[in-house]
Length: 165
Image (cartoon, rainbow, N blue to C red; front, side, top):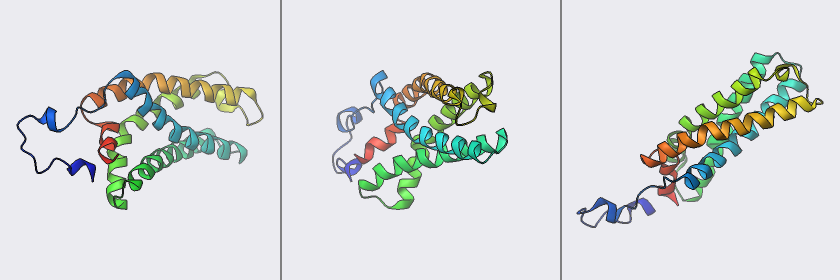
């Protein structure tokens, strides 16, 4: 595995042997887009299923949030599993890489939908449903990118995934 490459070398300068984790705004934006992809899949699926089945707002949001976490973690696990690690390690990496990001993303996008006038009562056939959902993803990206930048700068969040590339 790549993260063990330099294990046999002396550690006189950890910066020399272990490059700094990505921490700039472009890296944070990429990490946020990766997270947003999984969250968006789960959110759209959960909102669409709950709305189509005529569920009330709370169970629909709960389903959307659960699926956002599931798909968010699944996308990261897929990348890590391709690096040849076992399922348990991939799950641990996904939990470490994505949990904080997904929490902020879910708070931002569900909060946006909750305060958007009429969005909670819109159906799949209403433009308001799709407009409020799209706006919620924009807000989630704007809120979560600085969080991911902070995490990356400390070697946390998506920085743990980079050890498996």
